[in-house]
Amino acid sequence: MSNHDAIDRSEVKHMSKETKEDLNADIITGEPGSHPVGTGIGGVGGAAAGAAIGTMAGPLGTLIGGAIGAIVGGGAGHAAAEAIDPTHEEAYWRAEYANADYFKEGYDFDRDMHPAYAVGYANRARYPVDARFEDHEADLERSWHEVKGESRLEWNEARKASRDAWHRVS
Image 1 (cartoon, one colour):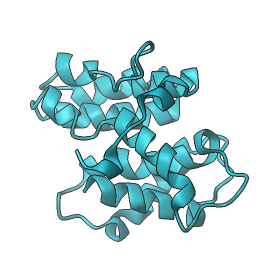
Image 2 (image 1 turned 90 degrees about the horizontal axis):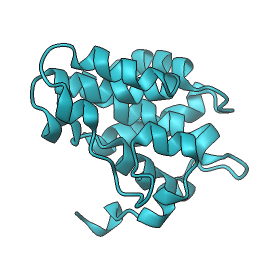
Image 3 (image 1 turned 30 degrees about the horizontal axis):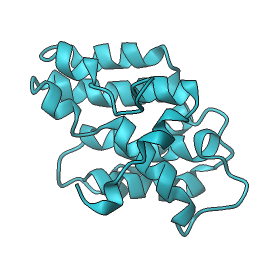
């Protein structure tokens, strides 16, 4: 793991309850969770099961759960589910978003920015390895409108964060 990927586990511990539930962070240690979707399901139906589990946490949880489940549905199990570790990605972007050229004072990470990053990293696995963000932007914009919740960002603002997250997990 490189230094820029270092995660402050104490920061994860202090995230909102909803965020920790969405990200499967260990409630005591803040460690990224072992993804039960990845370890327990495998094979047929992974995407549907992941999305169903995520639905309990709302549209953003459904997106993230579906992404993990889609990978698992390929039969690769735990290792594939960890390829897109939502706990790790959320913690990384929480630490880095204020350094982005699109950062604006007054935007809250959980409310405004996290859904935008999640659209990029959670949707990436649905496309071929050589897929370009721009070639699937219409789909990603639809996903944004499904999961944005109370975010104050419009797609033209959210797309920059989504694109960064897409490229980070590519």
